[in-house]
Image (cartoon, rainbow, N blue to C red; front, side, top):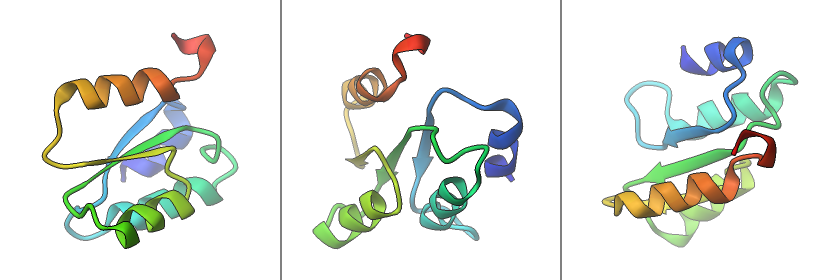
Length: 89
């Protein structure tokens, strides 16, 4: 799974789709936040569900930002810039 690879490769930021088959993005986000190797990596969540409950759940699980799909590519670029650690810019 990609979340396990994140502990090895230690990316500067993760863009995570919430609506995935099998293991959904909320479970992946929860696992990332509970792993001492990945808990600090900023996560920008993308979701087809833009209701307050879904956005709140993503934020409460540790997403730095939630972007509703369909989205403008500029939204993703701006979210990455805003959440990328300063040393990585």
